[in-house]
Amino acid sequence: MEFDLIARIRSRATTRDDVVLGIGDDAALLRVPDGHELAVSTDTLNAGVHFPADTAVADLGWKALAVNLSDLAAMGATPAWCTLSLSLPQADARWLDAFLDGFLSLAQQHRVALVGGDTTRGPLSIGVTVHGLVPAGQALRRDRARAGDDVWITGTPGDAAAALARLGLVHGVDPAALSDLDTAQQAALRERLDRPTPRVATGLALRGLAHAGIDVSDGLCADLGHVLRASGVGARIELAQLPASEALRAACPDASTRWTLQLAGGDDYELCFTAPPSARAAVERALQNDAAGGARIGTIEAGTQLLLCAPDGSAWPLPRAGWQHFEMEPG
Ligand code: ADP
Ligand code: MG
Image (tube, rainbow, N blue to C red; front, side, top):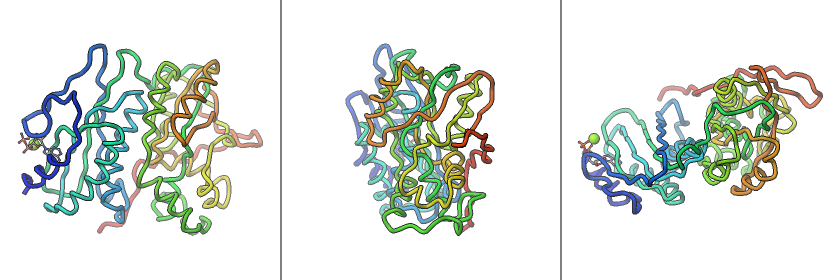
């Protein structure tokens, strides 16, 4: 069974000139240009853990690649190649075609070649590895934030979490407590959950500008926390500065619900990065690489604390950060 599926994948796979040998042999052969480092990252999506059961198959394909490209964006790496490891309950060509529609449309957008993978029978699981290129020494790392840096975020965090919360899939947020939304607002939030946009162009533009960066997958507090620990610093975040979409504001009855989703919700795939105040104008220009833009939300400080400041200046308690996975009813 797997061979038919692999032939189907091979006939549609994206390619590029630096692929010496793609799908079909025991390993792919890829040409890494002189003076570059290879950035490699893997992420897996499992049914029942990483996406709601009603997720469209094409959206699964999109998201499986998007979350990986987001990791490359956070490193300031240019995406080049990927591999795809599929575990499928049955050999279903229609499912595969829909999956590839989403996966390959994003691969094409970013000129990423699909150069290999593995196809097996088993519970639905999608593993993707991406390979990117970065000029030697220029990658954006987590451990380079410095006291005095500004903290920035791209886009509007919290939208995907709001979509999950509406489905009752975020611990601690009662869907009944969220405000009713019109169809367009519902669709806007769900789109952010199912079709996240990896901020690749922004990540590249931040090379040489940002000190440290990470992509937000487990919630802003949890992921900024990784930067702080790796860099040995603290931060002060101004909640009033958190950019929020119109749909998110409409969904949240109060600011405290909104901040909880924005800080601890996850699935954002936005970039959180630090840069010196002297780079502010250049950062603003880098953010214009993506329509989603971004905002300055706080400051890196000496110490190890992450302080959240409410608009009235009081400290806001850290929400239970980083629900890494949501739980779903089996079946
Ligand atoms: P092997 O036994 O050498 O691992 P496979 O039969 O697993 O070979 O795969 C044959 C070829 O098809 C390999 O080049 C592999 O990289 C590619 N391939 C298998 N599954 C996928 C997939 N899901 N996506 C892309 N390429 C795949
Ligand atoms: Mg194999």
